[in-house]
Image 1 (cartoon, helix red, strand yellow):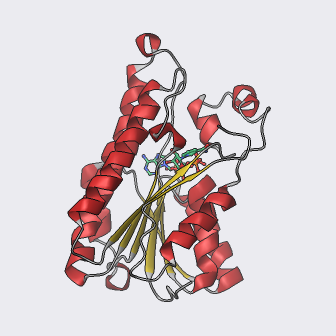
Image 2 (spheres, rainbow, N blue to C red):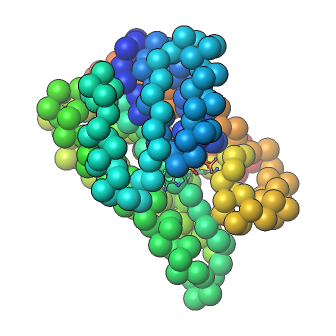
Length: 248
Ligand code: NDP
């Protein structure tokens, strides 16, 4: 494990689930944590806790990754000590609905595509040029098992995560010849607010998702993200599929 002390780590979607667990996992490593999401009060609560527990430096800001203008302006407006991002965890994402394609909500599709694909692209496009210029950086994209296999009624979400997988691979190829690394971490079932969001707050339906299995915890994925980020510079973990033992 190499030291990443003093490196600036940006986590998108840090207000809950895997993103918040990544913040917890990076905090003891002496990094500087940039936490972004739409729910600013959640980020502030998390930052206060991490500062008290680990003495870590944090900076929180509201960000809707779907809004290209906001992504560019918020990232360009970061205070100088936060502007050189070393590690980008592209985690913000969501699923909406679980419907047959010919019955699905077009609004749900747009939200998934705008967040999971376009949002990830906007953030990446804004940050990676600085990494190339400084010849230092690591992009860690949170994909999904859904990018490897399509399950019934998963259509558009699976398509969005297949796109994330292709984008991770494409970015890695584009960065060959530079020291900037790209890792894809693709989880299976993780118990977070993901299912609540997917079913628009129908908590009974959300709970039922985890009824027949022992899901991963957000911390399981955060461990893997930190593992990727702490390999020596010549080692790139390009893709890891992380599943609950009971998931095929
Ligand atoms: P959560 O719902 O707990 O977290 C999702 C995070 O994404 C929240 O912090 C949310 O913050 C943020 N987010 C959503 N939309 C936006 C937006 N437009 N702009 C900025 N931030 C946004 O779910 P998970 O932790 O499970 O999900 C994290 C990632 O993991 C996602 O990419 C998801 O697809 C992926 N994943 C999850 C799996 C699971 O089973 N849970 C399995 C495989 C992959 P806020 O609402 O405050 O903006």
